[in-house]
Picture 1 (cartoon, rainbow, N blue to C red):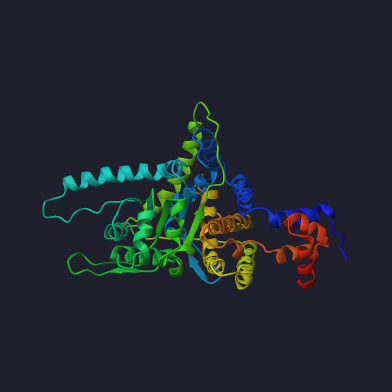
Picture 2: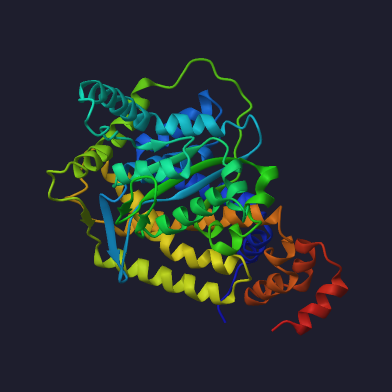
Length: 428
């Protein structure tokens, strides 16, 4: 029998009983340390000088990468084609700097949209009275009706980024069966996640069709509204399963004089602009090549295959809600692979010449598992925690596997020795 040291046993048991927030925080810091320098430094400097939680910045950056990429790059793996679009929700209280994280991360896109808007005003001014209204180029969408969102996406077919400071109003609409807008929003986002077509037919206004939809979503939500998020059909419809949640994990209560090095902002802005340049070029009518396939190494493809099989196996043993979320994780890992690839190749615009590596896939998997842990944290406060926390039986199984004693389990769990003894004899 292989010898297992007491220290290793203690660590195994400690990790099993560690809170999900502690686990997520450790995962977050590991992920940030593996990011390219322009993203890592932006997260760290925003935390130091503006006290923006690191997890909020990470999710906002992923939204920005996802929006800037759109349909321009895709991954063909395991028999499926996937694109970069992600849906992210930042959870916190008022004053937690949710909006500040969004503003910092999406500033490069806003700069492009400002230029697009000024160009549009010039086009309108120069157009003849009888001409059709010129189409407006736009990347980010805020405060739009569902009809406006459809039309903007039709005029900008590569992708649109839907960014909402407080997403509660949209969630409330989506959970109201009598709200036509809410149902339309939910259908739009459900179909858009897997890039399905959207056909809009109206009697009084123009009808149009989006052959491949690609919306991205970023919204802030106060934690007291989470029960609304998982109520009124949002859970059953699968909308929740498509979300990457970001509860607050880090905080900085120390004020710091000065400001971040401008070079950090410039480096980050350049990387986002390099991605956007491909997207903008692909939307030009004269451009023949609209999309580019990201090639993947054999070892990276094998790792993605093995991880997906692992997810399927874990899903079969998972409890409700987590089981359904794991199903969508088999898609989100592909989307995260694309976003990681874009991040690592953005500084030099080397997207078309590099391949998705094993290291890229490993980081995408870590991100996927991190957001699963975040989802567990969200459920802890809103669903019976007994359904998602490790039971005493789970801990006993780990203890037996590592030749630990009943006394060790009693110390870890705080349960009475007699209770542990009874469960010990019953546990296989």
